[in-house]
Length: 315
Image (cartoon, rainbow, N blue to C red; front, top):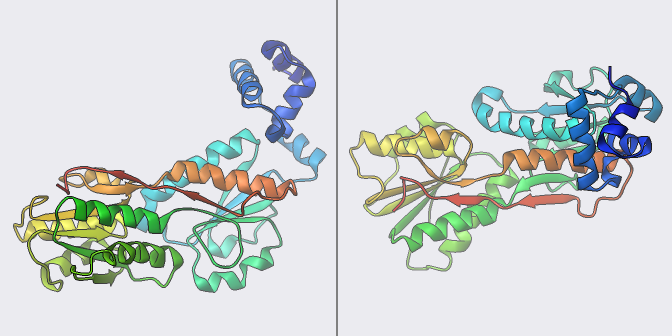
């Protein structure tokens, strides 16, 4: 079994440097970390997590609490968990996936929480541990999220630039900040074109419901682009338009928001605002470790840009 000394010799560094990479990686350059991690991998060296926890008076466990039904947005959350797990591994932390009912079972050093709603902010402060939210909030809790408003601004402006005369926003019917921000992104662009009609429809984040509304209830004209608050809604709009035998993308365009799996199984594939879900998962861990180490965050909120991916549902 490889030892700390073996890793140090393999990486041509001191044992102290190896220890620092394992216990305080934020104090070590990326070059040194890569050298040590490579040596650890080649030697199949695994730090003694129990000893590390005892030495630092920590559990070396981070709880990830998802407050939404996983079957609704599973591909999305698998990418988030992937990013979280990758980053936790650098700090030798274990990930414990929790439900709302099991949040208090066992100790931990901090929480990453996603899927929060307004009612959750009554009990989150009672956790008495460092917390990072995946998703913007107005409760002064550190968070990581996409720039939701800017993302929809980009999508709406792109639709207009491509010559669509009418632009409709298909929102998610939840009273939450991420949805408000996306809706505001649509409104801010439409305000630049007073001659264009503003049209907003809100619904559950359901492809089947979006398809039915598109076919039966929403009034729209040729040369319309649907700006959707999620890829799930966008897929529903696409199916609805296809059931009506309408032409995509020349007469009707669709732009989604997420860019995680669902956009690629649509036919034609969705134009979408792609979020860096894995990168945001990593950022959640970095923010949380910073708090656990009792260091002041440079900024309590980290915002990621969403990227427009143009595919077959727009001109």
